Amino acid sequence: MLAACGIGDSIKENYPLVSASGSGSQTSYVYRAAGETVPQVAAKLADQKHPEQQSEQSGDRMFLVYPDEIINLQKSPDNPADTLIEVDSKSYVQHNYNPSFLEGYLLASVIGSLFDHGKYSGGDYRGYSSKDTYQPQTKYRTPTEQDKKAAPPVTVNKTGSIFKRSKTADSTAVGSGSSDSGSTSSKVGKILRNDKSSSSLGSGSSSKSSSKSSGGVLKKKSYSAPKVKMGRSKITRRR
Image 1 (spheres, rainbow, N blue to C red):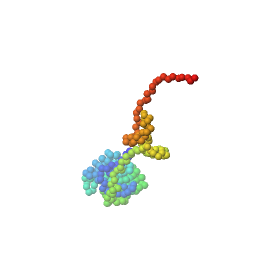
Image 2 (cartoon, helix red, strand yellow):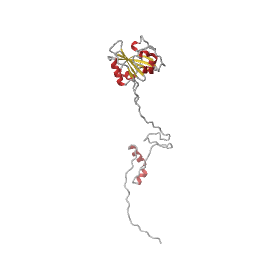
Image 3 (cartoon, rainbow, N blue to C red):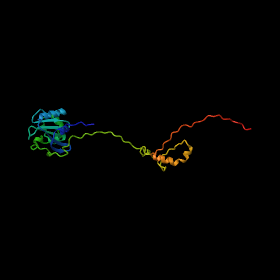
Image 4 (cartoon, rainbow, N blue to C red):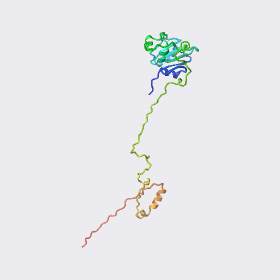
């Protein structure tokens, strides 16, 4: 059965990863949407999975808030025709973002929930496009092979049957002609019935040789029922 796919996994499958920061529960991954504007990307992502809150439409920056991820969409500084899609974990936002900065985009209730109502004070960070001025706690790096991994692989559940052999079961294959442990030969013979009594007494060797020449299989000869003659008998009494 397939697990529900998060918005971050959907982004991984559709856009190239350009930078990464953090580890564990505090992660930030930046993807590039070439030739797409910020509102276009926001509409596409919102159609795939409806966010808890979406900031007002803007050509420069927009936020989409999900239960465990916050999407920070920014116009690319080096190529204004592209959009940078920053996927930040909730823990990354709590330890790096400036709550006052987010007030210009998100509702106060959402910001309060993000920072656990003052439990986390955040930092000065505002997003990847301004990381050199408002730096996060951990620097961004060129994505590693681990970072580049796509969405988690699909597990196919297969059903199999396991048969347990009985301790008393015969270990030989069916049709192998196994014999009892006390016997000296595994061959099974058949008794042939001959119509002529004279030939049955002295034909033991010839029967064996003929059976061997026919592939070792003893065939039972066909015969007809003996004819019985009905007659009269006379009983006399001795004097």
